[in-house]
Length: 448
Ligand code: PHE
Image (cartoon, rainbow, N blue to C red):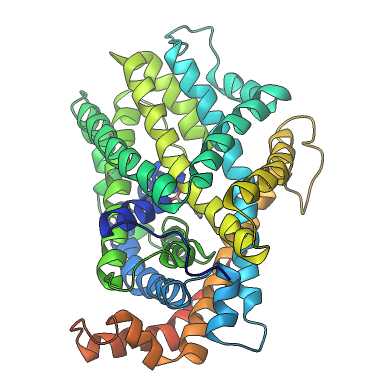
């Protein structure tokens, strides 16, 4: 293990933008606004914040502690901290989850590239002859174009990862994240100034506790996992590049706050406009690739809004894609002792092949079904519902029962140099050791 010449983040701001870059992604733009509207508005937001603070935060601490203490990739970290046993399988599961998610995330990123180009060519016109649902189906289901756009998205992300942690991931995140934030705020302001926007704002924020059911609670938990990219070694891998004096509590809290704030701003950007123009809100690809283009075609200065939106969409998706890719690259570099560039080059061939299958599953390969789902839907389903949650389950078990409180506290307090109240550490550790495993087990059981 070439620990001494390992790359690392330059400063705390770099760590924060990289973590936030991973967290802020499609989940904030196409999932959160809809989930909030569907599940009782402010009632859902409150639930989400509770889960983010009481479940995601302790899990994030665990990943941070494992990564920074071991200073190696997701797989080796477990065996380094606890030699013997098969704990490195948890790391393998993380690398596998990152692999699976990257392979379909890049296909969606590719659709984003295509729609950004469409926006640049002002193709979203208020023309009754344009069927936006059909336009999306055509985009996703043809053979070569979506593969080529996926490859463009993937290769840009791969080039960033190939340049290293400090010169690639950190440098790009430092530019991309502030730009993304400003663009989203600008869209939100314009959207909320539209006549009739208040219906959308009410849709997001009206607290309606009557629609809160067991399903709502599960949805809030699932979102708190997915949106913060937990359970697959991303935070763990990034933390392995973090200096020993970084404040883990502060970085984690800031990441969670920023991710939640961004999700709320994205909701204010999307829903008021959707309602102002009389559309039905929807989640997932339907929202971004059908409802919004239709909306842009009808709103004043919609052409410009479309360009800005799809550019922001690409930035958000790309900073998440690079974090996924980094988990796999870090493992390959250290496991096979090869250069980063070589690892990225070899992995690119594998990724492009699997991602192409995902892309084709929307068209010519749509008949191939796994448990009744096409390949992309199946990958999406098992990664979000099982791989991430099972990964998180074993991560908390590892820290709670194997690594132990002393090591956990040592990392959290930077070897005792930070003054953290003992009560805080104790309570967090109780969550990690007992509560989090039970809750995560319940989520998996309920989604079966
Ligand atoms: N957190 C990202 C989002 O909100 C999604 C993601 C999940 C990214 C898992 C990486 C890993 O869109």
